Image 1 (cartoon, helix red, strand yellow):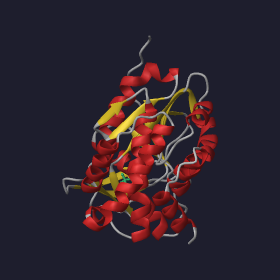
Image 2 (cartoon, rainbow, N blue to C red):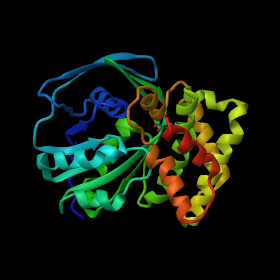
Image 3 (cartoon, helix red, strand yellow):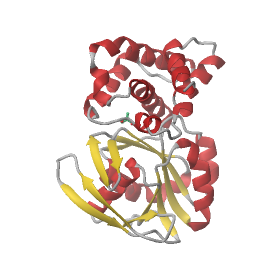
Length: 296
Ligand code: KPL
């Protein structure tokens, strides 16, 4: 297979925490990066890294044509963003979509033109966006899945870039198991931190363990009904590990809920409740969170 493995020029869409974290880390590593900004202007942010170093990052607005696109926007915003950006993408552009919750992989594949590579990335890095600063609050790791054949000529370049931005990175062809594992992590941490209005680390308290265990156990039972192997013990250990690694972070759902913005509840807990209903599986812990956050 032919390989074109030059470094890519990245355009990051959305000025959320994960997008700016990636952009700042690319800039630190001298990887060319621009931001897709609504008006043709530039953006400066102060980057506080995990090792407490600080750096001013300055980004130019991206211009067409775009060769490599990183799209870490909320699940509900992906379709519109891709439709708007498609005219600006090159014929063999590489498109990396990232959001919490269960993606519609078939729909994502349809967005790519014949020679455009499309990928999905899940990440457990913690980041906090404040007015003019971006704070890397929790070491995480990321998983990258190529979703079509047109990714193959660019695998090394895309891997290297995403590993710089949001590594350590693993690549998996079988994204389903990885997506369920990330779903279990987000189903446990995000709605609970939103309801309790607390940082991720607060969930480590003994009083929250039974509820966390029940949420995760329900996701594991559901996964098995969907023919996905998601063992409870390893998955619960992963949840604990993310709580510890991102203890100082407010989850994305806590932040959205607190600020009255739309949340990703429907692609996380809502997806679990709807899929469980299909299998006639009772998921009371997830159902209770779904109701608590929907009803307000
Ligand atoms: O994905 C996250 C989020 O906040 O959305 C975690 C991993 C829970 C980090 O906060």
